[in-house]
Image (cartoon, rainbow, N blue to C red):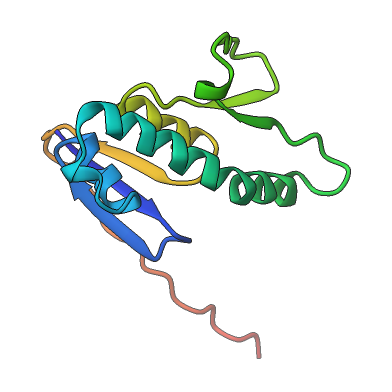
Length: 134
């Protein structure tokens, strides 16, 4: 399975087999860290991304919108998993959950390629300008 990650306003695009390889693109030095230090690096990255994520959500919801609150789970050990809540959690406990939570809040875009053949592509529609009425 290949995971594709797009970020930085669609200017960055990378694919990898493992979530840790994608996080190494977001967090400098991530690949060389021990598992415990990786968790710390994910928490620091999440905390460093909060302002940007919150600003982006506020802009998307507009001045009168009720943008969801974004919090880092490591700072709130009793973080609920209620999907109906207006709180979005950055889940830092493992690589895959962290990537998925970044995608949930709109910081990155993820796609999965499970090795299936692509769907049949239909023939393109040909359009021509209409003849002018004379």
